[in-house]
Length: 385
Picture 1 (cartoon, rainbow, N blue to C red):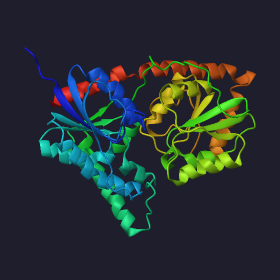
Picture 2 (picture 1 turned 180 degrees about the vertical axis):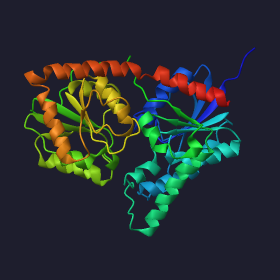
Picture 3 (picture 1 turned 45 degrees about the vertical axis):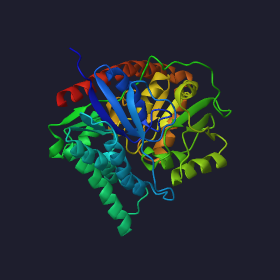
Picture 4 (picture 1 turned 90 degrees about the vertical axis):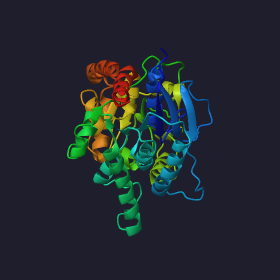
C-alpha cells in the first residue's frame, strides 16, 4: 500500500544557493538524504536560483521594511513575514526551525497548525549576550535593551515550546545545562562535510607575494573575532587573506582598513561552491579567531583542504579541533604568537609536527559527514510524526 511521505516545513534564515552560513549548506545535503521518507517545504531568504528537486515548495521571506537597516529590529519584524509565509504552505506534519532568529514565528506556526516543533540551535542569541556580544545593540540605551530582551525571549520561548532541541556540538550544548526544560529533549547532531565533492579542480593563486598564505573565511562579525585578528601582527613571510561578504558594520570596516594599511593583508570577496574549495586548497592555513562558535563548519572545510588550523577552540570548535589546531587565547597578542608558530611548522624543524596535524585532520573529517547527520535527524522526525 502506498504510504504518504511525512511533510516537514522548514523555517531557515539562509538560502540554498550561495548560502550565507552553515544552515544553507547543512540543509542541502541533509534534506537530499531524507527525501525518500520526507517531503520538504521551506521558508527562507529570497533565492531566485533553481532549488533542489526534492524541495516541494520554497517561499521567500521578503523584508517589507525597505528603509530599515538595523539588524535586530529586522529580525523581530521578520517573525511576521516568516509566520505569514508558513501559513501559506500546505499543512505540514512538523515544523523544523533552523535558528533562534525565527523562534517566535516557528512556535506560533507550530501552534497554528497544532503540530510538533523541532528547534535547531544553529546559534544562540541568549548565549551570545552572556559573552558580551550584543549584535551592535547599546547596553546603555533603554530602547535597545528592550529589543535585546525581546530577542532573548524569542529564543527561549521557542526552546520551551519545542518538542525536540537539536544542538550541533557537545561543547555548545554544555552552555544549556542549567536550562532544565531542555534536559530530556536535547539531541546532539553535529554538522558535517560532503567529502565526495571536496576536491580541488583547478590551481588558484591567492593574492600577495609572501611564502605562506593564511586565510580567514566567513562572516565579518564580532563573534568571529575580527577585531582581534585585524590587530594581530604578521610575520614578513605571511599573507593574510580575508574571504567573505562585506556588510554594513564596523567589522567589515576593520577589514577594509587593515587591507588599505598593510601590504600583506588582502581581501578577495565572498566565494562559494567550487571557487571556495579551490581557494582553500591554495592556502597553507586557515585561522578561526572565534569568540563564540556553536560548531564551525569552516574548520572541517579547512581540514579537508589540507590546511593547518589556528583557532581559539571555543565552544563547538572544542569538539574536534584541539588535537590538530594551533590554539590561542582571545587576544591579539596570543593570535600573533600562534601565527609565528604556524610559520615555524613550514621550517625543516616543524615538518614532522605539520604532517602529523594534517594526517590527524584527515581522520577527523571522516567522522563528520552528512550521512550520519541525516540519519540522526531522520530519527528525530520519525519519533515525532
